[in-house]
Amino acid sequence: MPEWLNIMIRSVVAIVYLFLLTKLIGKRQIRQLTYIEYIVGITIGSIAAFMATDMDGPMYHSLIALTIIGLFPVLMDWLSLKSKMIRNWVEGNATILIKDGKILEDNLKKERLTSEELLEQLRTKNVFRAADVEFALMETSGELSVLLKSQHQPVTPQHLELVVSPAEEPQAVIMDGVIMDEPLSTIGLNRRWVRAELEKVGVALENVFLGQVDKGGQLYLDLYDDKLQVPQPIEMKLTFATLKKCQADLELFALETQNKSVKRAYRFDSEELQDVIDLIKPLLIR
Image 1 (cartoon, helix red, strand yellow):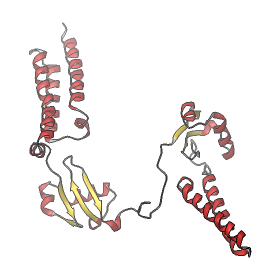
Image 2: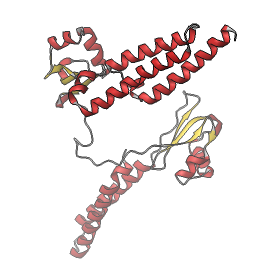
Image 3: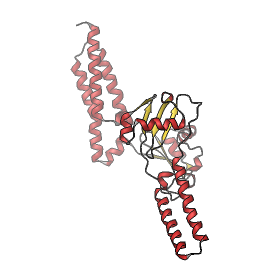
Image 4: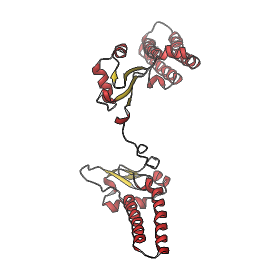
């Protein structure tokens, strides 16, 4: 057998076998590495390269070595599930770097991090002042986890005691100027509806790079020409404003009339309409 063909066969076998080993080890091998997995990753790469180019030794020797070293992290993962002590030894523990806005210099030295590196890690989390941080931990994967102080955390609808509708994935109904029939049928729409919406905003289908429909049935467009501005859908907001105006008119009619029975009817209708508005507000205001 020619030497170049032998190298080609060995290389293909090494790649295929490494792929199978990686699938066996699991997704963590490519997501984050423990100390053991880091060592194993380097070792099996070296063995695979040696197997592909070494013409003297038999190939199965390298395959045996790859199997033993590749299965080692699987064994350690199994032992880690059984024992917390082994898990701590293999994976390590998270280290607190900032507590109550105060940087813990000793822990910083322990992780061999400089203040510049810590600030860089904080900036990747959109944090620019260490004093704003309640806790910052260096995870075993090397990632920095940050918890801001309460007064510096972003305001959410929960903080404001607002009820919002659940988020749902929008459907891409236009891609590269082509209408996508399957997403349209999923949300119960058709091509006629798409063309009617495009006519409303005066946009040709071939000029649309991407079109998405949200759960409220509103079409959002991104055009090839970024200089063109597409009017944003306002039907939901107009509906909400109309309902609020009707409710306010009912309250005003109740105040103006002198007939007690009519006044009670207006007030009852106003309260009923307000209940409806409160119910559908999360769907109309997003």
